[in-house]
Amino acid sequence: MPVSSPVKPGERVAKGARTRESILRVAVNLASVEGLEGLTIGRMADELNMSKSGLFAHFGSKEELQLATVDMARKIFVEHVIRPALTRPAGMPRLWALCENWLEHVETRVFEGGCFFTAASFEFDSRPGPVRASIVAAMREWLRVLSRAVDEARKAGHLNAVNAQQFAFEVYSLAIGAHWGHQLLGDKKALSNVRLTILGRIRALSTPGCPSIKKSGSDMKCRELPSKANLPDREGSSRRGLVR
Amino acid sequence: MPVSSPVKPGERVAKGARTRESILRVAVNLASVEGLEGLTIGRMADELNMSKSGLFAHFGSKEELQLATVDMARKIFVEHVIRPALTRPAGMPRLWALCENWLEHVETRVFEGGCFFTAASFEFDSRPGPVRASIVAAMREWLRVLSRAVDEARKAGHLNAVNAQQFAFEVYSLAIGAHWGHQLLGDKKALSNVRLTILGRIRALSTPGCPSIKKSGSDMKCRELPSKANLPDREGSSRRGLVR
DNA sequence: ATAAAAAACGAACGTTCGTGCTATTATTTT
DNA sequence: AAAATAATAGCACGAACGTTCGTTTTTTAT
Image (cartoon, rainbow over all chains, first blue to last red; front, side, top):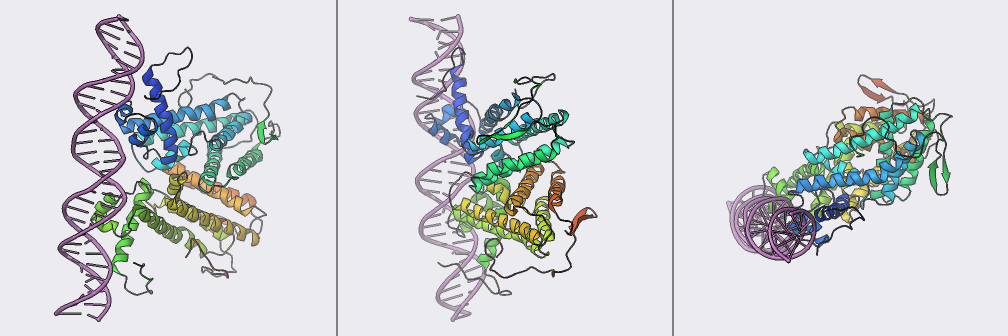
């Protein structure tokens, strides 16, 4: 009796696709803990109460499974980190939302073992092959999303002149550091400390006209600008890559 | 059977110890590329032209091999990153040397796959066990060395009041980010960019009386203070941990 | 030089790995 | 409801895994 994810009302999805998805959901979490190379078909089959061969048939090779896993992780990452940030107005609110959401997705264990892509990045940073390529592509996209947000903040007059790419890189480095402190050292305050550090870096470069980022409860929210609507913008050019 | 006692300097080294060391030297590099879990006894035996069982006998279990590998990596790390920095005078010169040496040891591939401990950190950040514990201990020590250097720089009047631990954390986060950009994205400028970023962070907090850190050729050197000698200080309290 | 000790080997163990097959169910489509 | 198709199970394979054991070779101490 194999498991498959619940079918959504209205939407007719083939059984195979449903099973495939539940497999990948398990795969993503397992990989975030044990690594993509530590993903073994036998273990997954056990965890899903299905046969090795039955599971295997969905992918045809381990590498295909790994690639599919990276893709699924990307989807989850977009859903939890990027998409919600795009509902915020371009500029400082969106930039801050991206940082917040990233830290939060580690804190709330969207992936069992912390950020999937952080683990995958350092696991594959010295290996050739398509899996690495897929991870690299995802990370380049993430960096692009982040640095575009920085650029938008500059254009909106929220940030003083900065090298957007460089600043995005700096912010993300701090985030990775937070992951390291939180996940490896077990530093409970690592995430919130880095939240403040990033905030400090942003504040140091923000203009007087920048919408304030202030505490509200135990959370920090960035006050929205009144101008733009509260919807994900599909402004103009085609959006390829991470968000699709 | 007890482990052989440390031999006096100049004394002949038992064959076993020599072999053990060459095994570990291979192990460290292999692990920096394939991960500590990817270390397989068969592969290592092949690479060293010896038998699996002969190699295995040196450690008794894979976990022991991993622990020994972490220890060897620690020794190499100390030799390339920490020890040379301790020859510089406490304060800004030493702090900067630590940063420089870390970035350099990635650039010059002291470990084949980049920084051993960066890889190990993210590989084991979600796994229990003694291997993880050993990595954590090493990283705590590294952070302690770094933040002590920051503190010394403050005491020497080179840096304005800072939370040493926090600042050390920030600096190391940037370093990890550099590793990520260099190793995963193949960004040739990642290391030198972050070198400048760290420099910027340090400069922003340094006092007027701080010895300047200036370019000399394509390299940056921190001008030494005239006061202290150019030797590794064993100042006072026992030094336990990383450097031993 | 010879005996004791240490180190390295070779073969094999039981397991698990990824991956093929061929049946046999379940699900869709007609 | 029957036929066609898709999904899963069962079984087996060769290779590689970590590990054990008895033997042989090399090093060390007498």
